[in-house]
Length: 135
Image: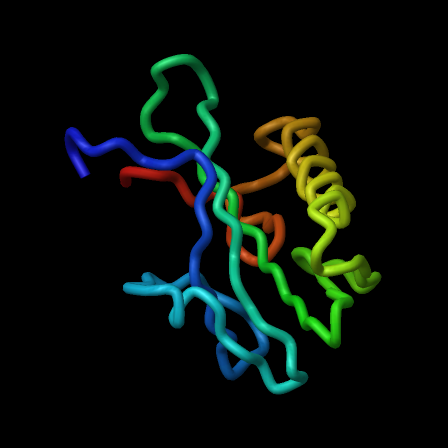
């Protein structure tokens, strides 16, 4: 994508594979951004691109699986591989703060490791940490 600006935070579609793992998929519209799973949850992903250094290329991208279900006005959300759901009123944007805190803590944990400790294929959320933008 030479010459094209890339977003640092973006939503992506995800798809569950037969073995229970997830992969990101290119979506062409909103209907492909959110997909249902067999448990009634809706699946989507949040992609965060970080610069390892100023003007660095390629950039590192991290993808987080987000599963959610809305019943009446209550949203139940699972972020990454969390087993504990975050529950909040769907019309309260502050209810998302615990989800963002979970994502930030995952990134802090990843960056606290030495490069040789985390290995090439360790995961955050559902996508390998080794994935880079622009390869």
